[in-house]
Image (cartoon, rainbow, N blue to C red; front, side, top):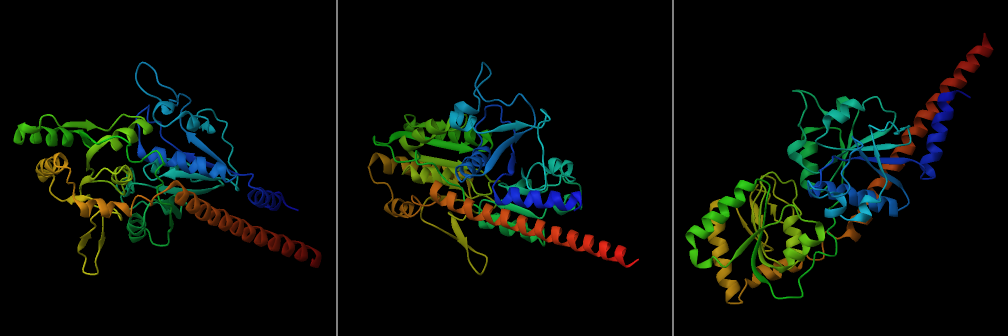
Amino acid sequence: MSERIEQLKNSIERLNKKEFGIYFFTMDTKGNPTAAVANIYEHVRILRELGYNAVILHEKNDYKFFGDAEGMGLADWLGTEYVELPHISIESKQLQIGPADFVIIPEIFSGVMKQTANFPCKRVVFLQSYEYIFEMLELGENWAQYGINQAITTNQRQKEYLLSHYGGFKCDVVPVGIPDYFKDSDKPKKPVVAISARDKREILKVVHSFYQKYPQYRFITFRDMSGMNREDFAEALGESFLSVWIDDLAGFGTFPIESIKCNTPVLGKIPRMVPEYMGEITENGDLSLYNNGIWTYNINSIPDVVATMVNLYLEDNMPENILSGMEEYKDKYTIEEMTKSIEEVYGNIFKDRIEQLESIKNEEEAKANQEVTEGENK
C-alpha cells in the first residue's frame, strides 16, 4: 500500500475519532476588548465542550494574557477561563498540520490565507466583518485563488453579501451568542447614557452637541463603553437608562442586542449593512424597521433624541412600544442557540471533509490497482 493511501486512511480515522486539530487564527488585541476576538474564543470554548480539539492560534510568543503597567490582558477583559484554553503560536514552530486538521482564518487576514495555501489541511474563512473581505487583496484576487472555498459568518446578510461576490463558495451561519450576565439590573436605572462608537470622534461630537443644546441636562452622564472587561461592561449597560450605538461599518454589531438583554433601550445609527434584528428589507428594496430600538439614519439627530428620552426617563414614561418590541429579542442570540448551531455547522464541515478524503483515497486505490493490473499484464 502506498504511503499516500496510508496517510489518507490515518487522516480519515483521526477525523472519525475527533483526534484532529481545529486552529483558530486570532490577532493579539494587546489587552483591548474586541467583540470579534471574543466570538472566536466562544467558538473554541464550545467546540472543546463538544469534544473537539479546538485551539487558539496566534502569531507571536508574546501574546498578551495578563495585564501589566501598559494595560489589560486577555484575562482582564475576557476572563481567566479563556486564557486556560489551549494556545499555540506560529513563532514557536510547534504547529504540525495534516490533512485531517482545520485552520480557521478571520476575513481580514488574506495574507495568512496566501501563506497557508500549501497547507495539506482544510482552511475556512471566519467572516465577521464584510468590510474586510477585500482587505489586503490585490485587484482581481480572491480567496478561491488561495484554495479556500468555504466560510462561516455570523448572519444571513453577510452570507448573501459574500456569495454575491464569490460564486461557488459555501457559507454557513453561526449566530453570535450573548452570555447570560447581560441582564437587567436589579437596581433602578441611573441617569447614564452608555455610548459605543467605532470612531471615538463620533462620541465627542454627540456629547458636546448634547451639552451645548441642552445645558439643563448636565447631570446626565455619557459613559464610553470601550476598554472594559466583559462583565463590568454588562453591569454598566444594565445600569444605564439608555444606550447609543454608532458603527457604520458593522456587519452585525452585538452592542444593541446586549443592550436589549439588559433592558436598556438602544438608540442606534443605522449602519450600511442593516443588522437582521434592526429591520427587514421588503420586496421593493425598502427598509422596514422594527420597534425594538430607536433607529436613525441621521447622526446629527442623536443629541435631540437623547434629550427626548431624558424627559421620558425623568417622567418614568419610557416608550411602551419600544419596551414591548425589545421583549422578543431578550431570548434570542443565546449561548445555547449558538452551541446548537456550532455543533451542526462544524459537524457538517467535518463530515464533508471525511467524504472528500474518502473520495481521494478511493481514487488513489483505483489508480494503484490499475497500475498493478497493467504490470501483471506486461
